Image (cartoon, rainbow over all chains, first blue to last red; front, side, top):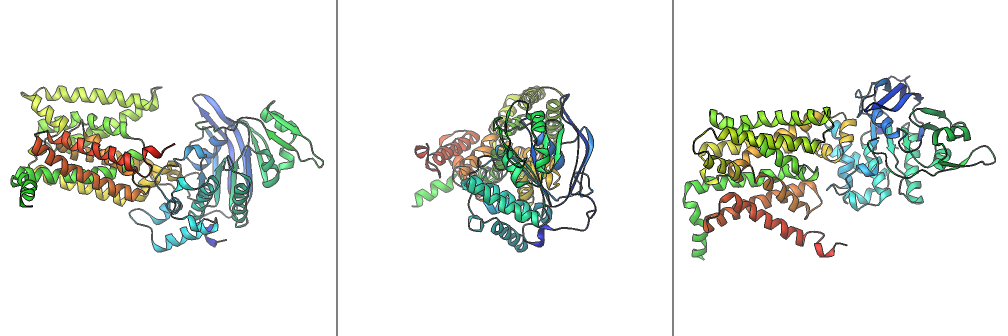
Length: 273
Length: 278
């Protein structure tokens, strides 16, 4: 792991990577999120789980600073949104123009645009970082290929490489596993494992409750409000899931209390929600 | 051989033809570079609207004896703000808001111009261009503004790239998204003004969109797309001017017809030819 992911002194070392306090968001008079509060320590992987329209994307937008909350606050390493550049946000697949004429390396370089600064072009040093990031996600040999020509799993890894090049400490991934086969998913997780062990905090929205139970440190169950937050076993209980999904979930109890669950809700995007 | 050379050089024995050629070349080179973003961001309708929206500004500046670009910029920026306000504060969608302002401005421009006697000629020139009427002062202004627009696009290449490809990333990188967005609109307005004499308000869109769209069929690299687009734009400008000289077609339509023909050739022979698409 490159030291590049561990970062600057301007952060309050005692602040959690993410502190959300009494956050509410309204859209055209209806409430998309109501009084959500949680605290996410650095170096943890959090699954954000809930039915479509539960407000997962809204939550990510507010954390990333692209939407303003109606009430409450978000603090990232002690800063308000806009006060830092340590967040990487990989949007849902449907929001990306895959035909855009860019190569994998160019997409990764975009993560460094702020660092390079206005009116400057990337230098040798920046290209080295981009090469290193692509190498780290196993795409060194794909650097000059068009983004649209890569497989779904490779495309997700390009965006993780972009987050690496950005030296992000907090990564938001919106439904990154949708449409990926098992090996691609595992490849993504092995990169996410490396990032986490380097201290990067990961927020991942997913529909896959099995993954949430098995591969995450913490799980957040939302449906327009925070239903439960904590370690998977304490969050993914029958009572909580029924609260979040109503009748749209099959719950199969297992021996030691961990459940195998299937989200039967449609796999669609919640763009604009 | 010498006959051929004579055929090629004959038009340029006239100084107004040389100035026209220079103006057309600048327009052909500059428009497609910015046009690449217009094509990639799906801003074609906006570009066309902007070209018509600035008409009252151009006419007012023309009547007052101001530089045309000043009037165009004032009206262009004001209209962009009005469109934004309409679509934010009411239930009307952005394209409808653009349509309302577009048609209203076009009407206002024609109404202003009608105050002048013999306005039909002026109107024809503004709508379809008057390449052969480019004065030395016009040419100097076209050269300066065209160069400035080109330099701005090159200087802000990586910022415009991020803004166009992934606006979310532009926000999380804390780039000045609104200012970049406004700057791109201002550059569009400048490039449109520069093009008015060459192809006119009604045909500016052809220089903004068609060469860049043709180039996008031939390459999948943005810098190459800009370069190929500029080459197509410049080739069309020169070819169109010859076409105009030897067939008595008006120069604006001649240039646009040429670039349109090149687009269809690119569509036929591009990296994914039509007959191989499934």
